[in-house]
Length: 343
Image 1 (cartoon, one colour):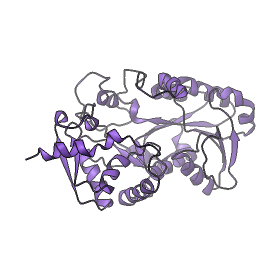
Image 2: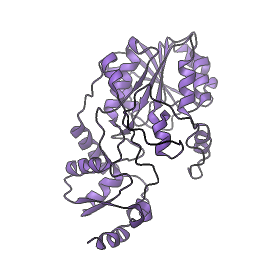
Image 3: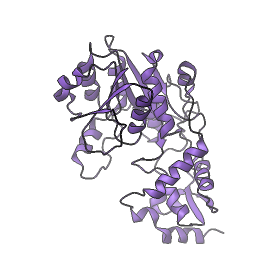
Image 4: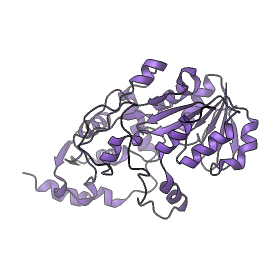
């Protein structure tokens, strides 16, 4: 099968590329050339800018892909361009979306009104009514990021991809993904304290019992590769994520056990914590997602179990700490002052 991947050089992208290449598919990766990735020998690379995709239309159409996997559609315009480019040229578009499309996400971020909904989220659960959830957030001086952030909306991406009768689509709604090459270093904030032998990790009570479905990068990549290659995924939307969701307390404890940390987690009211440890979210609203559909329809199963996944992530985080660490996030003096006042 001829597969064209838009993006595919950062975080989970190279894992998806490797899986598809190992299965014997003819894989081409279209990317900007700014991220160095170790792609398998035989994978073709085409360098160009995603925005606008129309600048590379002729070259991409010459690849004659059967399936186009878009790893990075962020805006409605992104989706419109990929459909216009490959309508009549490809058999199907597979687009990576996010579980931030759900109403529950909007309630967590306090952008959607209404009480917390305790139900597990399925592909048919309500979506956000408030569009463009990241507008106004501080992204520093990165002009490209500011522009993308202003127009980012996976709900609109999904509408375009799934709304074209001439070119079928598949949508994968991803969870909070962790693992090697994670640019956000999601485990680092906890692991650093553990490796610094902090006897106590403080946790805001606002999120102590909050749950959010996770997914290990290799497992998520396996789900993506499956949806790309299985014709039964045509016209379908799939949640991807682990079949269990830890509370934040349980998640930190799980990391601690794998890191051989022997301290304790101390849950405290927000107002008693240093400002850097206070969480401004609605922790009453969980984001617990049901991934039954992809398991039943496509036979998906995680190739890596949770304990191995955490161990691999810890090993990578220790070997590749963030290039820049904000000292305000690790103000141990302030934390010790709080801890000393606990009876």
